[in-house]
Image (cartoon, rainbow, N blue to C red; front, side):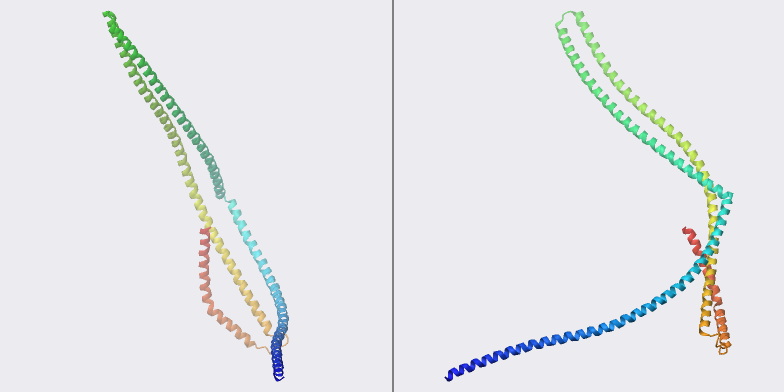
Length: 373
């Protein structure tokens, strides 16, 4: 009985320990889940605070953007009015400059030397076109002559080949004739050996000798004919070459004479045009210098106007002329004037030197633009 009671007690103890282990495990899991939930809640709080802060900053940013837009619209309207005024002024200046340019163009048009130059240029252009047409015509003629030369070479080669074939055929026929004559001589020699009549024998010997002489004469005649044909062909080629060279020489003489006359005429025209171009370049340089000076003058006046407007705006903003006239101190304005005079006198020499340097640089730039143009 005691042993059974011990077994039951041990079993209960094991069950109790197992349940305690399970409960501790569940407790740890629940504790872990609690910590995760607390971390999530803290993160949500941080996000909520951030959203609140971002919302406030966003509203503040919107207000700042509205103020910036209003300020930009004000500045745009102000700058637009100033730009329109400057644009209208520039249009007036441009109209004046265009009027001056129209006067210069009318003077050029009324200048007879200029009209003569224009006519000369037009004539030179037409002459160049005509010379180009003549050059193309000469190129076509040269091409036709080259084609004719190629055709002549082909015909010459064909004739040479035919002549060679005829010579070969004549050689073959001559060989056949020689063979026949050799056979005839052999037959006559046989008959000569067989005959007993002295007169007939002598006649046959003479006939054989005459045949040999005729053969030798024909051979020499063929050689002389071949030499004559060769010399005749060479003479024809040389005559044709001489004729072509004479024709080319006459054409070259005429062309050289015309080109010399044209070169002399173009030299005179070129010298006149160079002189007129130099005069026009000088006029252009002077006009551009005057234009630069006018632009600088208007720019200085605009800067002075802006400075005076700024001073006036400063005075109107900082001093009340309507209600606090008594409180204003005249000495302040006098000291301001004297300080301005002092500054103007101190930088007067610098401004004069700067103006001289600007004029020199402007003149150099104008000359450089003319040379590059």
